[in-house]
Image: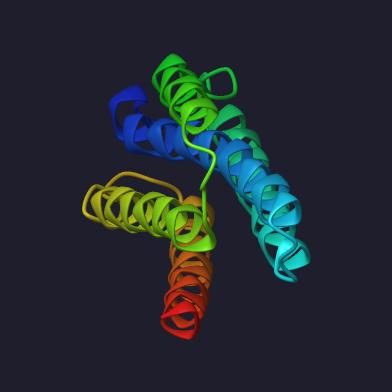
Length: 153
């Protein structure tokens, strides 16, 4: 069944965002490892999960007759490049900065999922259910980041 391409736009935004955040979370894992933190596996797992979310949505968009975006956006690459330049001049990167960046990305993710859920009319049930399930996973990941931020103080 072919779905209206306009109805798939918020899903394509989720795909792009999830690829972006998978890359960012991979960087968070590397930053935490460099800081000697024990949370590397948690954030690496979040990165893998986001990549899986994007891949699943890509498959669904194709099955619905749409064209998913290609991987991450240029905007996220520019943001990561800026963060790398900024960090090269600041040697005192700390876990709070890393976690705050992660929290910021998580909040963006929730907003994007809530936006997509506001535009589900005309989408196949399979896509709607996937969005709801992924939104819950993002919410749980955000709660884990918040909890870790509270531990850092």
